[in-house]
Amino acid sequence: GIDWFGSLRALRDNLRAREVVSGGSTLEQQLVKNLYFSKAERTWLEKFRELIAARYWAATHRKEETLERYLNMVYLGNNLSGVSAASETYFRKPVNDLTVAESALLAGIIAAPAEADPYRHFDRARERQRRQRRRRSGNHVAFGIPPGSDDSAFHCRLARMGIFARTGDGEKE
Image 1 (cartoon, rainbow, N blue to C red):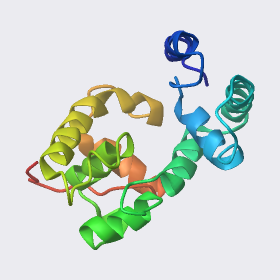
Image 2 (cartoon, helix red, strand yellow; image 1 turned 180 degrees about the horizontal axis):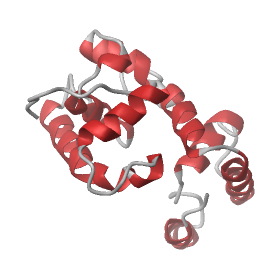
Image 3 (cartoon, rainbow, N blue to C red; image 1 turned 60 degrees about the horizontal axis):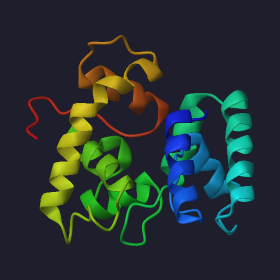
């Protein structure tokens, strides 16, 4: 859907700058932008169109489908698009064989691929990985996993969807 707080913050920033300098994008907004507006200029009209398209997308697609489509096209640095390509490049294994820690590392790269590049900025990539693992508990509910469940339940659900990861018994961060 729409993140109204993020959108209002972005609107404030954009009004102050008198141009589009910020976005309050949800996953749906990012996906429809990449699918349908990637070549478009960043104008007020285009942001409004993205907002309408994202609202329509959210109403007509399941969260699991949105996440899967997004993860298959998201940029993960080093000229890599999609978690499958990143998994093969960074870990030399298929995405379904990733551990919890490896999946978290990829998730941490998404927001800032250049800053979290594990080849160039390993310490930053590890810090983002740790942050992702701490934040994960809020994502359980979106995938039908009861609150308080451990990472293994979360990853089993994602693995059944064909998105990342397997659990790693006794795995260290």
